[in-house]
Image 1 (cartoon, one colour):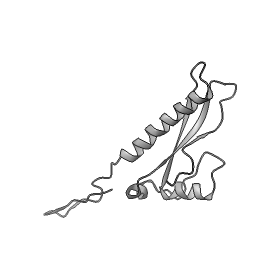
Image 2 (tube, rainbow, N blue to C red):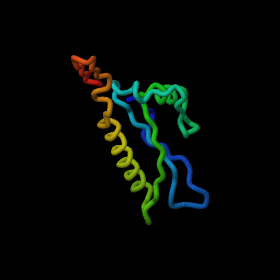
Image 3 (cartoon, rainbow, N blue to C red):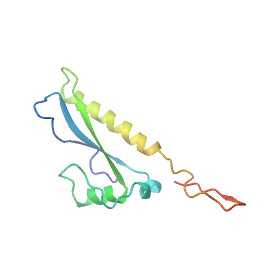
Length: 118
């Protein structure tokens, strides 16, 4: 597992105690990391260290920002559980999403060479 954390709570919009911003970090399957790689990638979280940034830049980890709206009377345990469900859905999406399955397949006018992609 490359991601040091899965959910990171950031801040609340000014004057709003019912919402807060967060980021999710998901691990990218090794075969697809080159598609996510971006040497300029950074995190919106100021606490990201060098290893975190390297993982984001190499494509080993991908980040998604979101905003959570707290349900009325939700306690901390309920909020934490909800964020874990949100993270799991995101991780499942990253793991399953593969538009590059046939990436690099070629046709030379006579023969197809079909790659298995990533």
